[in-house]
Length: 73
Image (cartoon, rainbow, N blue to C red; front, side, top):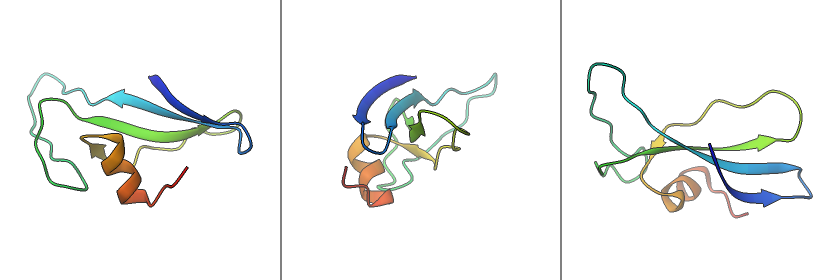
């Protein structure tokens, strides 16, 4: 996980994780733009305490993630 942004008032951090394939290669598309780049990422806002939410899907960039989730932080 890589920390990309921090919202201290909401006590959450935006984290990015590289989408990895298991032993069988699978082809993923960006959930928002449909692009098929070399590397895709999972993004999610993780609270300081409590359960960690599941990622919404693979995205090619943080811009696609923010457009898809309408996140304006």
